[in-house]
Image 1: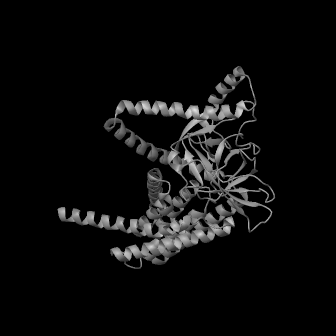
Image 2: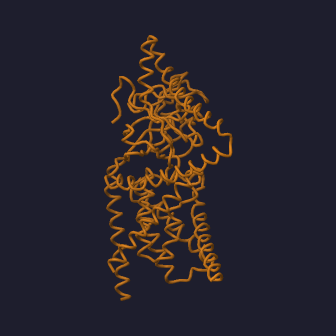
Image 3: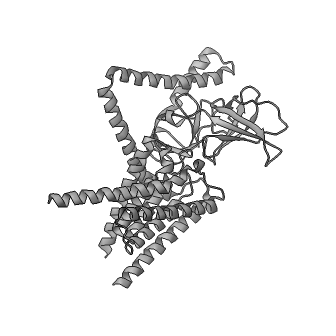
Amino acid sequence: MRESFAKDVLRAFLGTLVAVLVYSLAGSAGPQLLVVFNAFSVVVLYFSVRRGEVFGALLGTLCGLAQDTFSLGVFGVAGLTKTLLGFWTGYVSRRIDVAPFARNALFMLVMSVLEMTLWVLITAVVRLRSVSWHGGLILLQPVVTAVVGSLLFAVERRVRARRSRGA
Amino acid sequence: MARWEKRRSALVLAGLVTFHLLLISIQVPRGAEKSVFERAVFFVYSPVQRLATGTVRAVGSVWRGYFDLRRVRSENEKLKREAFFLHQDVRFLEDRLSLYRSESELRALLADFRGSVRPARVIGVDSVNPHQSIVIDKGRLDGVAKDMAVCDMNGALVGRTVEPVSLKDAMVQLITDKDSSVGVRSVVANVTGSMAGQSGPLCDLRYVLASSTGGEVGEELVTTGFDRIYPAGIRVGRIFSIEKNDKSPIFRSILVEPYFRFNTLALVAVLGPEPGSGGAK
């Protein structure tokens, strides 16, 4: 049991490195892209669906703290929201079937909207000021996250199907 | 077994949530001051960012180097580097010439000034809001410390270094950040105020009395140096609009458009302590 938990921590750390890598690449492509594309959320959603709530919570913590450290906001806010995102995504995906593309996209959209709502609320309470909306552009972030996340699953399914046909 | 699994999940979640609430509770009263834990996290992840950006740059460089005109590229790089220092020199000379120093004094000062400029590459932007901060590839080992002014290639003010500053990377708070504040004055009418960001493309010029006259749209703003972080005379931006302030009739509502642009932020200059000044913290 202890060994599997340690493995989960290690995997979560590797997952976070992937998230930092994707975030850095997105930042190099264009700083404004980061307003609508949150690489950390995509990574947390993707791996939480695959590996369950405990792993999701761990990955959420590491990814959230990484996101916090590359921002001037209060340290821990993204950590908290992503921990909850990872946990609830893992928990719900174990209880309902989120494999079909449309359902998967809708599920990710709902989770991303919940995460963003929570993040906005906590930021407003902790910093006692409103969040920058970037002219409403930030509201596209859950949509982009859901689309990218569900596309990842679709690609993965297609690759697996092709492999099994080949075998 | 299932019950134990459920209990384990709940315990992990409760533990992590408590951990984050503690982190937030510790961070809020500290304000901008970073905890050791946050610095450690930055220390762990910033090399990954450096690697990713470096790889993108290297791939782009190989592409351009081999498929574009190779000699022109290297010459362009050399010229860019020269232009970078020349822009900094001009800014420095403009500032110092106003003091009517002798030529030899100016040459000595210029030599000192060049030594205090550190070129740095931008390796990352703020993960939440690109108008808040950037990460550069120079850190403590390169002589970068907290509260050093950062300019773009044209000598326009970009921001200042803030914690975390690790061995080879540092975070820069942009002047467009909500929590940033820069003492500025207009070059013609000498309107003085404090410029604060809005975490967007424009900034506010605060504390300019409604009774004061002068200041026009398009007028250039430069740093005053009163805040002891930004050296005096650095170009900051131009007045974008001047209106009556409905919220506070005592002050005028002035918006400023900063000069620096994200697409020119590939290379920046970190200004060390100027000759004869106190130095960065």
